[in-house]
Length: 217
Image (cartoon, rainbow, N blue to C red; front, side, top):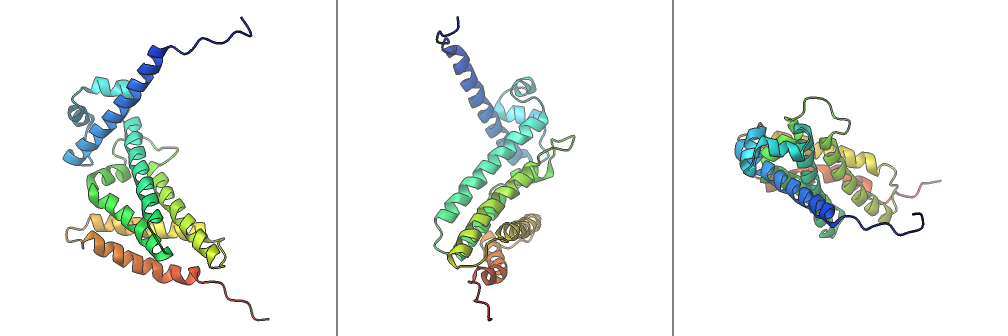
């Protein structure tokens, strides 16, 4: 009857939804373990084995391989977002913030290169995505970089209209360098790469972060 309060949602349904959410998270964690152990070319059988279950159970929680891939990519994106925020919060200067952003990305690649390769190589995808998670991760890094650049441009009295373009340019530099670095058999230590990339990026960015001089009439 209209006007009467609705019955509360069935508690069993709520508990079931929470159980499914937790189980999906456990399966994503198992997928990450399988990728680390077997490499970026891991198969669904190996993911199921790492989870101690069967492919049938996997497909109860993920409609297809693409959905599992997207869940793994979302986990990686959440991690990089958290680590970027921590790096920027701990920085006392724009140069330190830039170095922290670069370090967070490089450390993500170094900590588990097979997971990184899995995300960027799309091995589970059989058709193009409407939203590429790799671009989403790049956008996450670029957005944090743009906020850092914008804040320091404004403090210095400089124009900030180009901050977004500069940030995406820096992310392209960082990602390309990290991709090349992780595939090199004789790569330099991560700390060296971070230092070199910071020097390279700061060399150009520092001129933009300087206050805009007054125009001579």
